[in-house]
Length: 163
Image (cartoon, rainbow, N blue to C red; front, side):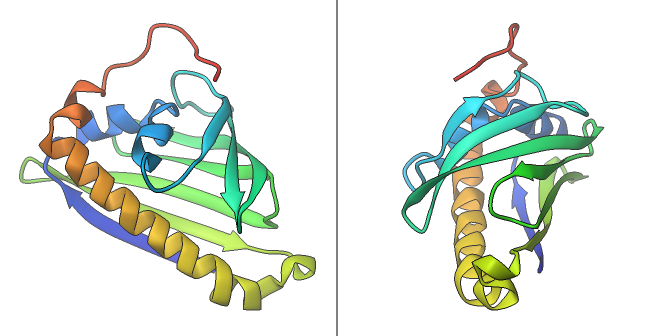
């Protein structure tokens, strides 16, 4: 199943990209509505780097692993799942400058294997969760932009971080 989410953030694309290129920012984006826990990551996204997390799926903690396969600052980056329940999970993040703002576009391709319910489970269970997740993330990005955290948090960390 293919998803495309798009929203505008009132911050430059360089700053928004800078915020996203540190995987530790995932916990900030999910704060208050999702209990993801980063298990391992480096301080900056780049091709070949892996990010591992634990996320509740239907109330059950599931370990998910992702490998970054695309990195084109400050325009886009992407990752694919290397561990988890999905037979396919690909996510491309795009950052499009527009009048001093940034259009953040997320394109996802997600498939579940038949033994987890396949397309029926995708349509009826996973798709509503993904839509809600990106709606909440869009709200979090706008809130972080308005309070100045998005622009301040865009700097790179000096050392790799493991959580």
